[in-house]
Length: 380
Image (tube, rainbow, N blue to C red; front, top):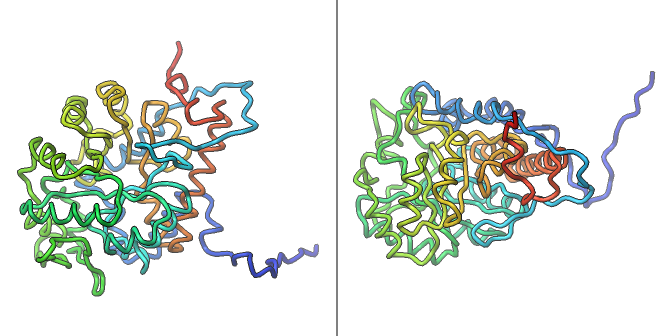
C-alpha cells in the first residue's frame, strides 16, 4: 500500500503546524505541559493544599452531574456569545488570575492577554504577575481585569489601585480566601522560589519586593504572604475598597451564601465562587456543589461566576445551567502557555469554545441564554 505524504500548503499566509495543533483536549495539554516544565514550576501550577482533596473534588463535581438534553430543537445556527458586567464576549469563559506565568513561557502574561483578546474574552491579571500591568494592557485587544490582594500597608494598596486604573483595567477582583497561604506541600518540599530573571512586577509602589524571600523550612511564596499581605482583612475593608475606586468590584473566594449576600450588600458587582483551585483550605467544598445556593442568595443583584475544575465544554454548560454567568479557566491556560506560548493558550481557549458549541447543539441550546436548570434537573 502506498500512503500519500501530506504536504503543508506553500501559501505564506498559512501558519506552520505546531505542537499545540495536535492536542485534542485540555487533558492532553496538561500531560504535555507537565512533561516539559521544571519539577518546581510543574508542582507550583498543579498542586493543591494538604491532601489535595478539594483539588480533586472540583473536578469530580462536574463528573457527577448529568446533562438532560433536549431533542428536536433547531440548532443549525448557534452562538456562544454572552455578556459579563456589560462586556460583550465571544464565549462565557474568562481567563482566571494565575501567578508567575513566565514560569510557563518567556512572554508570560503578554502571551495570555493576546490569546484572551483573540478569543474575544477577558483576562484577569494576578497581583503576582511577572509582567507590568501597563505592559499587559498595552498589548490587550479585549478587557483586562485586575485581581487584588490587600497589603498590610493600605497606602501601598491604594497606590496599586491607582496604577491599575491608570493602566485601563475595567474591574477589580478582590481575593478574600487567602488571609494566610494554604500549605501546599509540594511547594514546601521543593522550597519553591522564582528562578533568576523572573520578578513580581506589580508590587509595593516605592518599596517593591520583586522576588520571594528565602524560606529555609517553607516555600518562598508562603513567606511572602506572611510578611506583606494582611491577615486582618475583614468586611470593613470591602467598604474601604469601594470608597477608593469607581471600578466594579468582584469578590473572589466565596463558597457560602451568607458571605455572598453580605458582599453584594456592601456593593460587590459580582461574586466569583472559588476555593482558590483547591490551594487554600483543603476539604473545602467543590465550587459547583455550592454554586446553586449562592446564586439563590444573590438573586439578580450581582453576576455570579465560577472557577475550579472546568476542563470540558460540557462543564461550562453545567455551570451556566446551575446559575453561573460565566466560568474562569486557570490551570489549562498555563498548560497551553507551557506547550506553545501564546498559540498554546489560544488553542486551549479554542478547544473549550468548540466543545461548548458542540455541547450546546447536542443539548438543544442554540444560544447561551437557552441553557437553564432543566438540563441538570432529575425529573423522576
